[in-house]
Image (cartoon, rainbow, N blue to C red; front, side, top):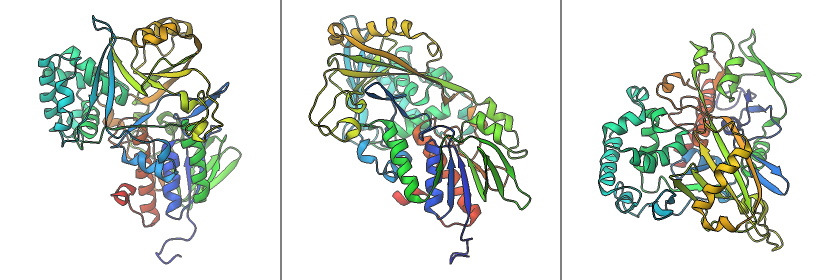
Length: 479
């Protein structure tokens, strides 16, 4: 026994090497538990990863986070990667309306250095994509939204569009503001989004603190953060990491411990955390672990499509923008992060190069709620999206397209539909020593990197409490 009364050697197995699993493993190991993390893929990072395409390092999808994402910021600090994914000094989102009669029109959503809600008042008052009456109605709806409690179960069964309609929001206001933010964060349009989750997003991101919605994103490939640095942090913490290993069974042993069949190996553990998607979790759950395990199968999924375009010259002069009046949603400049533009302080993987610069620009289009296009052939997407980029970026009309490819995540997130809240399970199951993690669990957040890390916090805290290990919540530590 140790001086704090706990068993000197306690073992845990974490199944799944996404952000939820890595977070869980780090939290358990930091508290003195011996951890084995098992991942079926050849890498860590889950659905936020990178791969090679010729000389490019490509993220499977563009991922961003906000300053209010305190859990994901803890993760970045823990893996020593915060400097590689900085946050804007102040929220500033260029929004281009491609359908404006006089040609593409630029507006901006940005904050001032004033307290909530005045921090966005000036931006809203001059936002050119809404009429004066629509801007006033948006302000009234925002104040009404601020009064909602996202944890109220009654909100879970209401769709966001109905609530917006009752609060005077026009179709244009929904398109130019509410869905502009909501689709990117919820992966659903307002009619298909739970009011509870929408209220959580807008209250936390836009109506909690002035800087809460400042945007951060990786200036290096996601694999550098979620795989390379994460693996280094796990190794330093003493976590045994097994990649390319499938877990086929999780069973309770006669002495009350757990046995995990991982590949050809059988792992004994005092605690097991399933940090895999809901269907995989359902397949591994032992009998009696949840009251109604089939509810996991009722949690739907939503796709995200990413379109990647490499031009022979620079066609965009800002790091990103959002678009209206076009199928294009958000466009990001990934030139430096991919290694296309090498040399300087932000060369490949942020390591610098010899000053050699390769002409060209690599843009990534992030298309959320992509049910209608997720299976569309690449040739059709090329015919549809290249002209749209030329509408939005006049310089693209004179540029040569060197490469055009698509990445598809058909089950990118859980679907945030009305009623999903009652389906999402807590971290603790009815089986002592068995816990759940993943952005689809009951975090109160939509399916984001923040939600994934928070689920890891919850699963680790539940396991450590049961194991008698002293611990504090990391967000409380940060505070």
